[in-house]
Image (cartoon, rainbow, N blue to C red):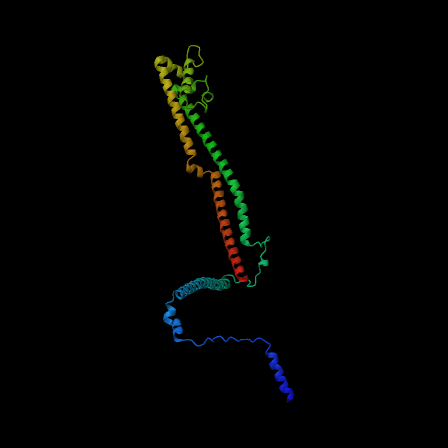
Amino acid sequence: MILIVLYKKANMVINTHKKLSITHHTQKIPTTRLLCECELYAPSNYDNDPEMKEVMEIFDRQTSERFREYDERMKTTRQKCKDKCDEAIQKIILKDKMEKQMAQQLTTLETKIDTNDIPTCICEKSMAGKVEKTCLKCGGILGTFVPELGLIGGSALYATAQTAALKVGVDKAIELVGNIYYLNEVSAIDLTQLITPANFNHKMSLIGIVNNVSNMCDTGGAAENTIFCLYQASLEESKFIPLISKAAGNAAEAAGEAANAEFAQMTSAATIFSDVVIISVVAVVCISVILLIIYLILRYGRRKKMKKKLQYIKLLNE
């Protein structure tokens, strides 16, 4: 007990030498809110605040823009999905249709066909292929031969017609000149040597021939004592020369007309098609055209069939 009392006194003596510490007490702020402060956040004041209005407008604008972008993306996505669905449906419909056609038309075609089964170099020779190849060879040979044959035939026909026309013209000129006062009975001249294909229709050439014979009628001439010379002696020379010259000119004109008529007849359609060579050429041309048509038809059919078969194979592989 005595120890306790002494401890307290000693403690009091020690505390008297220390400075006093003053504790400042601040006024406590109340946590409660007054009614006037709550009115600042009332809905009417909140909506009418300019800053809040600006924030709300920005929010509405950004939200509307994002919704619009979302709608556009969804439209594009829906269109793509719709296109894919339509394409898939079309493929399914086309595949079913092709399978039905295969079952109806190509009963011999196997349903399990691989693209490796299609030969790339060696193809099976069918009857149509053989006929096509034969027609192609024949058409090539005839296509090369027929123009040459036609050219040769046309040239030969023209040469034949021209030769025949010249012969007719020369014969006609010899006949008409020989009939001028029996000039053909004058043995001193040979009209076949004087009248040729080069001069049978030239008036001056024939007039020169008859004038030369007229000069032979003089005394001691080669044509003396012939009927032609007797006619010359019975007429005046001024009258006889114009007569025989006119007759020789008429003979040249008649010979030319006869030659032209013969040439026209030889080159007419009836004469041409009555010739065996021309008929042969026409027949060969017709045959070549028929073979060419057959070749084109077979080639078109084969290509169409191969194209359809490749389409079937492609659909089956898909």
